[in-house]
Length: 59
Image: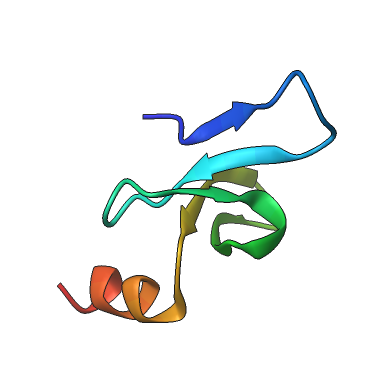
């Protein structure tokens, strides 16, 4: 699932927290980048808070 949604009216980009589904501005979101130097970026996951990021990866 892609949690990236461009906003056509402004330069802001809205993303969805993959933990709770809340819409947040990309500049204020906590991101997790999955990938490595050889394969490149596979996906970017966004979270609305550091707590949601921690809870997501603890489960």
